[in-house]
Image 1 (cartoon, rainbow, N blue to C red):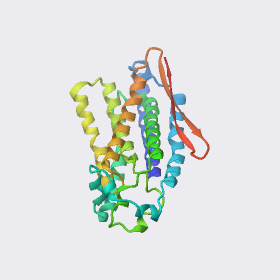
Image 2 (cartoon, helix red, strand yellow):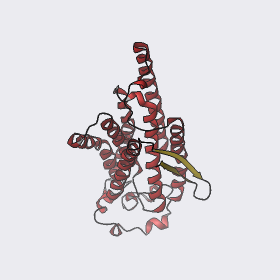
Image 3 (cartoon, rainbow, N blue to C red):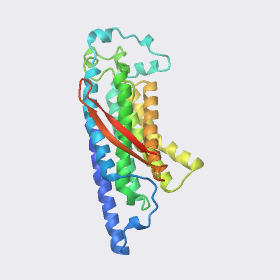
Image 4 (cartoon, helix red, strand yellow):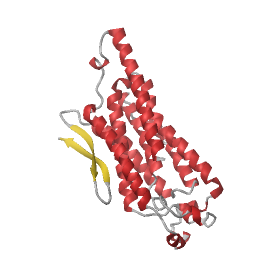
Length: 292
């Protein structure tokens, strides 16, 4: 699933780059002016180093995902100790979803995740927004880098068996191995929410949309990640609290990164850069620098 996510982001980068470049060329030919000469600046971004830094942070996170799969392995002895009654009442019903529907549900969750990741490409249809495609791409990658950092902070710190490990109808052979005790929290839901909330945040900032209209747009943006969350539970991969926390992490990342760039216009600045700490944990993440 990790490689699918990266592939989607790379394709999105290519699509937005092509569309925006074509639009800039058309404007220059028709007006003889660069569109940057008259446009309103919404965000304070230095794409020359924020774009490669954020992109590198997203790519470096692949090491974290591979490491997480290994540390979240479970043995048969550990699985035999699991008791559904040890799971809180709010989450427990997820354990008993039909295993026969797991594959279909997981496929649907992946579909809605990829749709969510592509939604910011809709900004390329807006002539007011697409002129700043480099800056927006920088922020989009930074938003995902922040979401990844939040996800790793939770997933590496908490070992929580996935719901299907408690299900007595699932064969033991499908329960043992890697990638089994990282239910906390839902990365899929976080990735999806980061993407759709980023779309709404940027669109409403550019068009100065406030109040109930903005709330309504966020409500619409909640639908794709909501479907991702639903099918992650149906596939036995996450509990209710896992997808709720993933939703919060994604919404925070998708809104906070653009907001930090937007509010710092008077000589202030926010920038993100990746870090990688080699060692047993292979720590990867993103640092934020704010100039006051």
